[in-house]
Image (tube, rainbow, N blue to C red):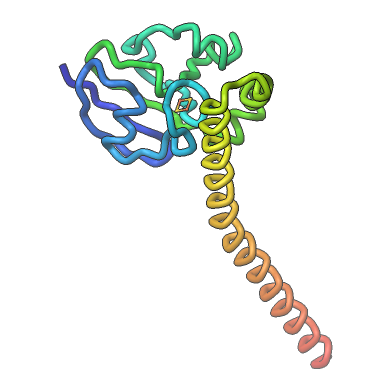
Length: 175
Ligand code: FES
């Protein structure tokens, strides 16, 4: 059965089949969810979404979601897209939570990644390092996108201030 799913704030929308995990729907439709996660097994929280509509169409939160998200977040319909599955047909609207915002609300997520690092077998250590590297790359990309915008805004402010002060000094010279 079909489900119409919309990702906010991008507005990406489309129809997917019942039984689809939210992260698979996001990948299929091109919505930016879970970009920093290489495994999609509830290990990074890069796929946190808040369900704005249609929460009753999703599978109930499992133990992994309950360990990642606080009871308050679960009450506010926060979900891990890699663990929440569409189970009923209808309309679902999801608000994509930027990972940094999710971290601020739930800082234990990243502490958990490093907590038992020393006790991990070598293969697990390598996969964890790869995961952390992917997160770093994604943060660097976000910073690279934000910097030119901030620079542009500062430059525009300087120009408008100069133009104003120049106009004021011309007015003063006329007087
Ligand atoms: S994709 Fe990493 S926790 Fe869901």
